[in-house]
Figure (cartoon, rainbow over the protein chains, first blue to last red):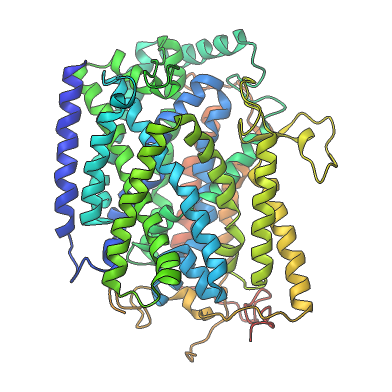
Amino acid sequence: MQWTELIVFSALFLLVTVMGFVAAKWQKGDTLEHLDEWGLGGRKFGSWITWFLVGGDLYTAYTFVAVPALMFGAGATGFFALPYTVILYPIVFLPLVRMWSVSRVHGYVTPADFVKGRYGSHWLALLIAITGIFATMPYIALQLVGLEAVLRSMGLNGSGILGHLPLFVAFVILAVYTYQSGLRAPALIAFVKDILIYVVILVAIVYLPSKFGGWGEIFNDADAKFKATPAPGDGILLNANNQLQYATLALGSALALFIYPHSLTGILASRGRNVIKRNMVALPAYSLVLGLLALLGYVAISAGTKPIVNQATGRPDTNTIVPELFGANFPSWFAGIAFAAIGIGALVPAAIMSIAAANLWTRNVYKEYLKKNATPAEEAKQAKLASLVVKFGAVAFIVFIDPQFSIDLQLIGGVIILQTLPAVAIALYTRWFHVWGLVAGWFAGMAYGMYLLYLIPSADGSRKHFGSSALSLEKLSLFGWNPFEGVKMTIYVGVPALMMNLIVAVVVTLIAKRAKVFNGTDQTDPSDYHVDEDSPRVKPVATH
Amino acid sequence: MPSDRKTGLRWSNWNLLLLVPLLMLITPWFNIDEPRLFGLPFFYWYQFAFVPLGVLCVGLVYVKTKDQPVVTGKPDKLGVDDLDEGAN
């Protein structure tokens, strides 16, 4: 047991717990019994709060442990996280402000609310909501993987169910204050999390390389390690076969990120269009940190860091690379701060994700199908309960099912959330697609994506299916026809799946229009997409 | 419906700057080791250089389109109403 680390960690954890409960009173509205307040923090966060909140939301604990772990294991392919988070902001800059405006005019809380308003179809909205909830659940579970990696590095590495106890305690606390304070809790905690992360990374990035002979030496060590392994895909540079995968994974992930419900929750909680635009300029500061952090995977190679064996699964857990590197090379008190940064880094996104999933459940399932005339207070009550269910579902995922399963699901999550892109993002610009075209496209893209993922074995050959998201082009099959026979290049599965979705959506749209099938009613007006905070047309917050 | 009904899209040529960071997806341009900078292979520092470049592009678009939304005179080709003939 590493007592100093544990004490520092616990002290910081206690601090954010107090903040989580106090947050209920922070910038308080008239009532917390409304989704605008509980689920969106009163829709009034300014530039700074949004920066910390969205930064804390997108750059999660899992990212912070998994990306360096990927670099440690496979090399350059893991660096896709940097292009991903650089091209992200230019891509979403324009659509996000449209989403904010139309949501502000009509009081939409979730992406599925928007789809329902735009197409007047609660079935399409239901598809979007279910996709969102299903994609978010394993993401929450992964935050626990990040948190557990730190707990186990501090010596809380018990076996069996008891080994998960510290994780369980941490999550109960999180669940209770999220229940009470809603989105204000992660918004306030994000300040602590992000400041800790910045301090730790800056220190690590200055101090550790000098300790191991400088960056040149570190890259040479990594190069030597990868050259010595038999695996063909690793190395400090890309090779001929994985460049397409690198670029498409970065692009696909960037397209997917802001249609995840939790990312939109952070955006809809902001005060106005300029807050969002300023954040699109300022958020890449986190990308820089993420890129630097990724390189710590190579530092761990030079340092000879060994992943610790997870006593619950009996396998070495590469996600412990960064915690182990910090633990071995920093004084205990600073390692404690670093662990707290990662641990608290898990709490912020887990809270936001559970709120986003709860909002989807409440608005697009509960109110739509179970209790049509629910009052705002009943909606808030339902969402609070749903957030508890979602979180305990995530804990159960980690405790009772192999964590590897969550990692696989998260991989699938990116592919499936991409299938909502036509209905959520393209619909912001045009209503050309027919509602049945979007539904058909969703089913086609989903089925094709799952089929392709099923074909992919894991890199080490230990599993035959759902092994990664990198599809070898020679396996890309259309009803048995392989257009790229013999091509070894790999591509991110999300791309062909989304293409299938779009093609089917276009074809069905053309047929439906020809047949003059009713295309739903559009509640939105073209001018809604440009409304800003000072307009008289914005819907008053927390009233109905 | 409100009387201030405008075209569904606004466009400014500054928006084209948002495409520049996408150049970073062309991996053959930078998938090389030399020249190194501070020990980092070209592959890495080239991509790091895109962080400030991306900020610059998005920042310019933000500043240049801030107070003067450019509304195109002619009805937009992708206008919601033109394409929406089946809606009512």
